Length: 225
Length: 124
Ligand SMILES: Nc1nc2c(ncn2[C@@H]2O[C@H](COP(=O)(O)OP(=O)(O)OP(=O)(O)O)[C@@H](O)[C@H]2O)c(=O)[nH]1
Ligand SMILES: [Mg+2]
Ligand SMILES: [Zn+2]
Image 1 (cartoon, rainbow over the protein chains, first blue to last red):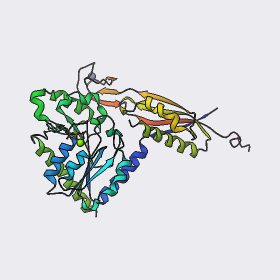
Image 2: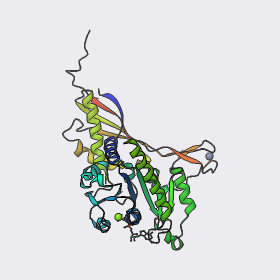
Image 3: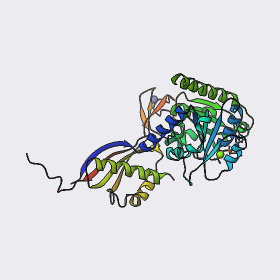
C-alpha cells in the first residue's frame, strides 16, 4: 500500500525563487527593469529601439535579447548601448535561470534601465517570472482584436499593455472596444497605450508613463540607501 | 516547447518531498493544471519516462487533474465556463465579469512507498 503525501507546491517555484534573486540584484544596483513580450513580429525590437532612442539621454540603458540569432541585438548595439544575447537554444520563452546566467555580461552598476526582449511568443513567456519591475506586453493591430480572448495568460500577466501598429488600423479595421473589454476582464485597470512604432503616434504617453515609473523607483532606492 | 524544463521541475519537487519523508519510491504524482496555465500535459507525459529514469520516480504514473477556466459575473453572481470568444455573462449579458479559476499549476500530492524493513511499526 502506498502512502499519499500532500505537497501543494507550485511547479514554477524554482523559477520564482531565482526571479527573486534577480530582482534583489537589480534593485541593489539601482537598475529599473522591464521584460518585453509579444508574438513574433509584434514589434518588440521596434518598441525597444524607439524607447531607448527617446530615453538614452536621461538614463543609462542596457538591453538583453532572448533569441537564437543576434540580428535584433546588432540593431540595438548600433545605438552604442551595452547589449547582451541570451541564447535560448530554441526555447519558447526566457526563464529566470537564463537571465541570471546572462546578468554578469552587463555591468549593472553602469545602468539605470535594463530592457529584456523575450522570445516572440504569445503563449508561454508570461508564466515565467524574470524578476523585473514591469512586464510589458505588446499586441499589434494585424494580429486581430481577439487575442486577449485566445491568450488570456499573457494579458493577465501584463503590468502595461501596448497596442502597436496603430497606423495599420485604417487599412485593417480593428475592433478596439472588443479588444479593450477582453483586457478589462483579464486585467482590470492595466495601463494601456495604443501606439505606432512606425509613425511615433501614441509614443509620448507611453514614454511619459515609463519615465514616471523609473523615477519613482530610483527615488525610492535613494531613500533606502 | 517548454515542457522538458517543466517536467524536470515536477520531478525535482516530487523527489525533494519524497526524500524529506524518507520514501524509497514514488508511485504516483497528482498534478493540478488549470486550462489557462498554457501547459500541454501530453508533452509532459511524453518526457516523463526519460526524465524520471534512474530516480525515485522511475516507473511512476502522472495523474493530471485539469481545472476548467471559470468566470464569475459580478452582475448576477452566475459562474460559467471560460470561452475564448466573448467575456459576457450568458445569463444577464453583463460585461462585469472576472476570472475565478483555471490558472492552477501545482503538484498536489505524491503516492510513495516506504522501506517495509524500516517502517515496521514501533511497539511501545
Ligand atoms: N506598420 C507598422 N509596422 C511595424 C510597426 N512596428 C513594427 N513594425 C514592423 O513589424 C515587423 C516586426 O517588428 P519587430 O520590431 O522586429 O518585431 P519583434 O516583435 O521584435 O519580432 P521578433 O523579435 O522577430 O519576434 C518589422 O517589419 C517592423 O518594421 C508599426 O507600428 N507599424
Ligand atoms: Mg525582435
Ligand atoms: Zn450575470
